[in-house]
Amino acid sequence: MDIPHRVLEVMNSRRHFLRSIIAGSPLLIGAKALAQDAQADAPASVPENDPVAIALGYIKDATKVDAAKYPQYKAGQICENCALYTGPAGKEDGPCTIFQNRLVAAKGWCATYAPKQPAAPAQ
Figure 1 (spheres, rainbow, N blue to C red):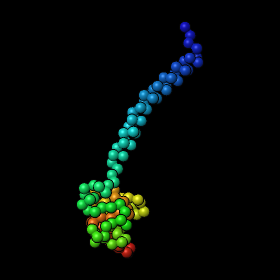
Figure 2: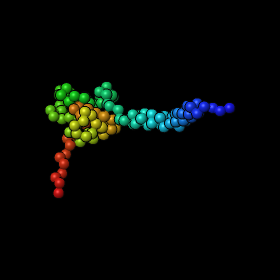
Figure 3: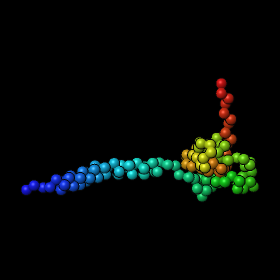
Figure 4: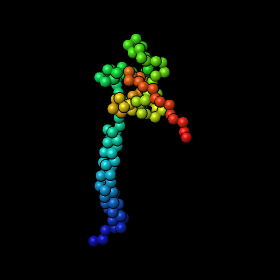
């Protein structure tokens, strides 16, 4: 019995399609797992109600620091220009060594503020 050429072509196409799906599935699952791992590895932001944040007076907007409660605060002190802030300049937030490299607001402040030392001049 002869099977028409078109039927064989369709059957081969389906087989090829199914094989492609089966062969590609592990790749898709692996890519999804990698994406989830990358999200899990991203540092979390420090909420103002975090126990350590409360103890250190961390606030996301330095203009709202209670100067009566934190007399050491001076206008212009923000996380972005603190020696403990390791995030890049110009970003909304970045890691802080005090908070185990979790993210703090660049415009935030806490009682551990220490001014960054000016960069040494190039030789």
